[in-house]
Image 1: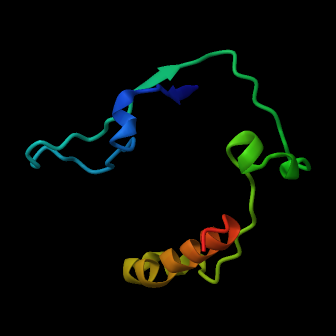
Image 2: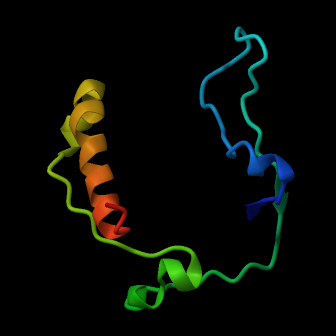
Length: 99
C-alpha cells in the first residue's frame, strides 16, 4: 500500500496527477506526488460501523449521495460540467456546513 509522503511542496502546491501525456507542454510534469510503500497494513470491513467514522475523528466519513444522474448521463461532459458538478458542490456545502 502506498501513502503520500509529507512534503514542504504541498504547503504551496496541492498534490496532483495528470492522466494525460504532458510531453508537449513546456515546463509541465505529470505528477508532483511523492509516495512511500508500506506493508503489514490491516484493512478491516467497517460495514455496519460507518457512523463511527467522522471527519473530526478520522479525517474521513461515509455519506450517502443520491444523484439525479444516471449512468448514461455521464456520457455527456457538458451535462456533467453544467449540472452534476453543481449537484455535488451543493451536497458538499450542505454536508460540510460551508454555506
